[in-house]
Each structure stands twice: as structure tokens, then as C-alpha cells.
Image (cartoon, rainbow, N blue to C red; front, side, top):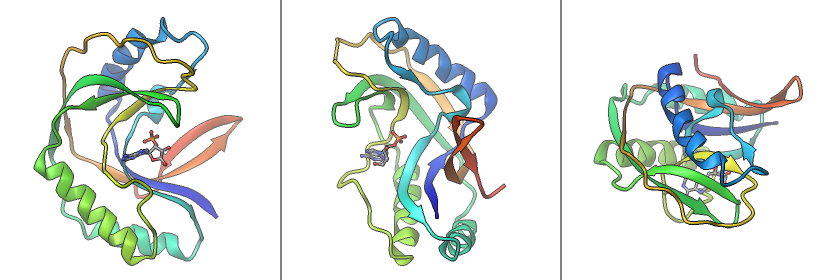
Length: 168
Ligand code: 2AM
């Protein structure tokens, strides 16, 4: 079994740009857990535990989706209280992102996976284990043009949590 999720993938340059936003929040949360730059992602569908037989079906289904070219404007910070995360998010969800998320959701549901969230809330998690909420700073818009998504494997490598893209 592997813990898998579909997500938008960022280039190294985009990861560095996102990092500057994380740095704006770190001072407020010295005890929070930092997401490393190469783990930044935007979840489209969280599958959870997937067995070895289902994985190739998910990979080949994902290959049937047309190449993407999605421009997102990340312009707000926020919290999810229950998972205790602080995130960066777009205040507008553009139609192509919604379409991609719906296509991925459909193919996952065809494989028998249930959506875990009643509503799609696109976000990039910046900090985990945020145990109190403080007013967040204003957020200068970050425009990212995204051309890739992947099926990611959430795994431990050398004691570090890593999100490894599988369809490369
Ligand atoms: P993330 O913050 O790393 O993207 C499983 O619940 C995972 O799905 C969470 O750990 C979170 O991972 C992501 N998630 C939580 N709420 C979501 C939502 N409303 N829409 C999309 N992804 C969400």
C-alpha cells in the first residue's frame, strides 16, 4: 500500500517563489513544522492508501487527461483549523483548474475512491502544526503558470517526509 494523492506540480523556480511567502509566516510560528520547498504542491484529489494493483490504473487514467496550462493568482494566506495548517491560496478558482480537478475526481471515483472534502479548496500548505491563529499578513499576488500535475507518493526517505511524483 502507498499513500497517494494527485496534485499540481511546481517548477524549482516556482518553489523558490512560494518559499518567500512561507518565510513571511515563519516568524509568527517558530514552533510550526515547515513544509520543504520541494514538497510544495496543490492537492487535486487525496486518495489515501492505494494498493499495488490500483496504482497502474490511476496512472494510465491520468495520462488520458490533456496537457494543462493553468494560470493561478495566489493572493491570500489562510488557516485550516482542524489539520492545523497555514496556507497560500488563490481567492478565485479559474475554470481550467476546476475542470482539471473535476476530471481527476471523476477518474478517482471510477476507481472506487471517495472524495474526502465536500468542497475543493485549492491551497498550498506552507506550515503544519500551527496551534494558534494570529492575524495573517497581507499577501502580494503571486502569479504562477502551471503546466504539470502528478500522482504523488507520500513517503519517508532518510527520515524525511517526501512527496515523490510517480508519473514522470
Ligand atoms: P494538503 O494540505 O497537503 O494539500 C487529506 O485530507 C489532504 O487533502 C489534507 O492533508 C490536505 O493536504 C488536502 N486537503 C484538505 N482539505 C482540502 C480541500 N478542501 N480541498 C483539497 N485538498 C484538501
